[in-house]
Length: 477
Image: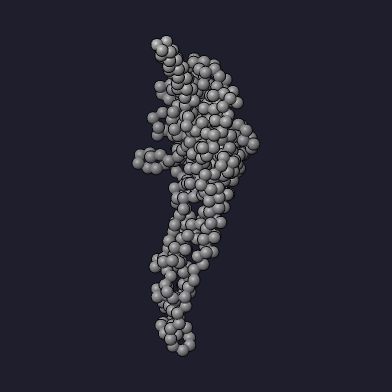
């Protein structure tokens, strides 16, 4: 099978007799074999606490058949733990718990950009962080709707095959998106092939065979959008990548085996506690003779038959509880360490940790989040390009998308009393506005500044009134 890069070159240079159907088939096969697709699936499953332990089945080896058989009578606890969800939600809250600030000049361009992104973007930003953390990347698709308005939608990364101009992935040229649809009551797969100029729709007529999709109401080859009744395009494939990190790997890759170990130890510990009795009885010259009956007696009755004088000898079982607890504690610690999360157990830092201790606590989470934030800033600036191009097309200004600045306001636990004290000591060194911006009780600095100014004016008026009344009393005396 030819490589993806060879397929790309064949498509773009048109120097091959390969059909579009063959190219689509091979691109999808290569995409579904990619390690990242399996990692995406696992990331989503573990976020929903559908861990691997749920697929485990307890078995025993049957000597008569020579096979391992599912033991339906055995105690089989399968206890998944939501470590992955905890770490991802913690990251989403830290990165997107507060709305980021998008700044651009002039102010009209900033307002237009925020309007085009819309409140929905800021509302969905935490969920975007979750999906990107689970899958390693997600795609935004900006488009112009039938009313001529700029819109956007997030696309599942498992549906998107990006095609770049070089192996260094410097410039996105084409995008294939494939998904399942219902055609005449039958499930089939559809492909959208996006180029810088147009989009072409294909439908799978049988396994691995694709042809132009004539099942839609529209033509199978369409422009990106129409303007004044004329076909038009963005001049680039309208897809924006939101990445998790440089390698675009999901967070779960770093600690999946640790979660699996934790699930296994807890589940087996539960099995041991349910199965344990006061003793396992060793019965001499008593019971069945065949190996199969020996196995059944041991599993069902917790007793075994041995050669020797008759009688019964109890053998007590000791469960290594302390060793299991130490293993679980170490595993939990490593989950937070390699998952780069903030372990909020306060026994290390006391009941009221200082600001320095809290910064240390959040150091790993902050480092992990910065990788995502850097990629998200780049993606938002790419959307700014589409926004500026849209505004130019509709005659609402010519704006430069490059200087757009994006600031994420990270959210973390802090020592409130310590911060208030620091703000008080800073009075006279920094401006009142800066002091208020760092005060934990202030959400809207501008509104608070107006309140402070009004209180000062009221205080001046009150002092003047008191002085006037005091002067009157003096005159009367």
